[in-house]
Image 1 (cartoon, rainbow, N blue to C red):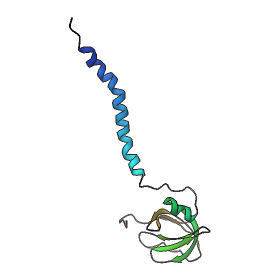
Image 2 (image 1 turned 90 degrees about the vertical axis):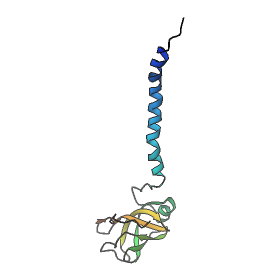
Image 3 (image 1 turned 90 degrees about the horizontal axis):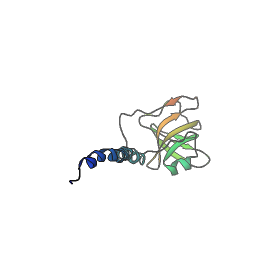
Image 4 (image 1 turned 60 degrees about the vertical axis):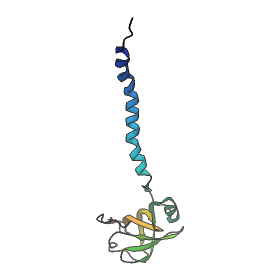
Length: 132
C-alpha cells in the first residue's frame, strides 16, 4: 500500500504556526533592543552630578556656577559640569540660582533636554537642529 502524503502536509502548518509566531515576535523585539543601547533612561528624581555623568544622563539639581549664551555650569556637592542647550538659555538663569536640568552626557558635560528654573518654569530646547 502506498503511504499517504496528506497527513504531513496538513500537520505542517499546524505545527509550524507556533514556531513562526515565536520567530516573528523575536524579529519584532530586535529593533527595540538595538535602539535602547543608544538611549539613556532619565532619572525620575534628581541624582548627583557625578552619578549622572557616570551613567550617561539623567536629572541633576544644583546651583548655577557660571552662565553663557547657550551654556551654563551646574554644581552640586558631588561635582560640577557644563550644560549646553540647543539655542539660547531661557531668561532668568543667574549665577547662584537653583536649577534642575535633565539631559544626557555629551562631550564631557550635559546636553539639556529640560531645564526647570527656580520659579518652577519648564523650558525645553527647540529640536530643529542636531549638534551631535
